[in-house]
Amino acid sequence: MASYHVRSNSLPSRPHPIIPEFEEKLSQARASEAASSSSASTSISYKLSGLQDLHDCVDRLLLLPLNQQALSQENHKKWVNQIMDSSLRTLDVCNIAKDALLQAKESTQALQSSIRRRRSGKIELSSEVKKFLTSRKVVKKAIQEAIGDLKGIESGCNFSPLNKDNETVTMLREVQATTLAVFGSLLSFISGPKSQPKPNGWSFISKIMRSTRIEEESQPNEFARADFALKLLISQNMKKSDNLNFKDAQDQLEELELCIQDLEEGLESLFRRMIRIRVSLLNILNH
Image 1: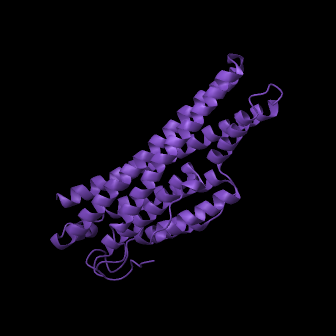
Image 2: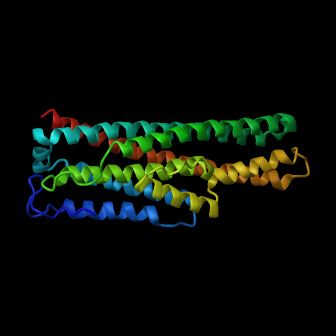
Image 3: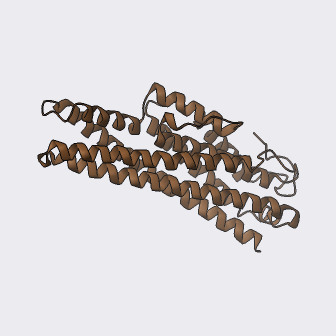
């Protein structure tokens, strides 16, 4: 990891107290990618929370006069514009993830309602389950496209230090790389392990997503468990004697809804922070 304690044009020779905090948050965010958890959703939520803290640090760093002065220099503006472009594309991916979660939540709530109204008849309920699974396929397709977008964002950016005298730009690029990795984990979590693309030369993101795939295969997450429970339910032709399957499906859908709500809140909070940083950078460029 790059050190931000050196003398440079963009940071003071004696580091501001926020800088060590930033380094700590960046290290924690990276470490969370390799951390295991008894609950996959808990792991993803932890990653989103760590990313929120990291963006908070960046927001405060951008308020430092020396950083603003460095980023507003003409020879640095092109790199800041590149960061702005990649952050805009990352926000688009964030919106895709938000839409996928919203669609999954609505489908989950609708199916839960149908299961509670089992008096509607087993044929209609079977149809509702199939609608849910079809909706999941649509979500997975959108997620696959978003994963491809992440690959494009990473391949279009070189996250190695561009200029040893410009630590502020390096800092922003490090944050962008970490953000892409977390989004890779999140998208993989929502879609499930079978939607993983081949690495094709990916670096940081592909490594994280292969790790996420191994974790999912060893312990299915809330999305995968709900899919499995519902497939088992319709495979039994909705027999009245299969009360255990109905109960399991209900339980898995309830867990999935809670998981989705937690991810939605974390993603929305991160989205607001990303917007705030973009506004700060735009103000610096237009100063």
